Image 1 (cartoon, rainbow, N blue to C red):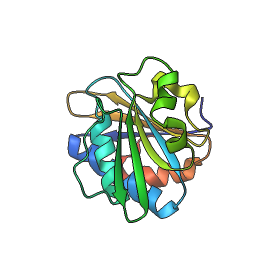
Image 2 (cartoon, rainbow, N blue to C red):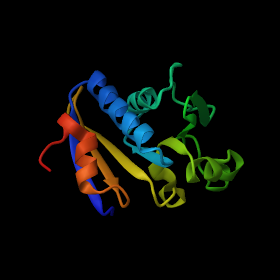
Image 3 (cartoon, rainbow, N blue to C red):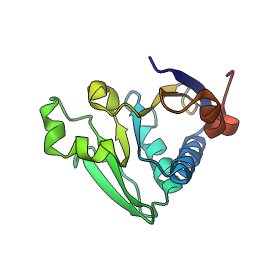
Image 4 (tube, helix red, strand yellow):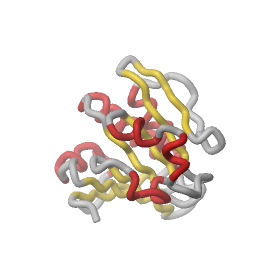
Length: 163
């Protein structure tokens, strides 16, 4: 269990992407490498969140889930962003084959289906758990050992509930 935790709610795909963009802006301004681990069932909005994060980081090209390619790389003025989708991976040895450790340790990375290999992620990981409330709304929990509660609330902005 993470040391710091904040819960948010979004009410549409646009809200989820907008929050993701807000998070991406924060990561960009912070200037430190960060692994963002997205967790949620199929169709809960992990890719929508990734799209928002990437936009906030300055990615201008279309963001798609790397379900079949396993990893997409996007260029920004601040450097490269690595976007992983671990859904089709079954064995931890496959992570080495795609350079997972190299790209998540000291880089900015977004990892969908991160819970499949949670023990393989860096200590500094920001966990983003997405759970459907209804067809459009999502409860999003941010968890971190590194980013304190006050900062998580600041990142969450208007989407924070009951913290």
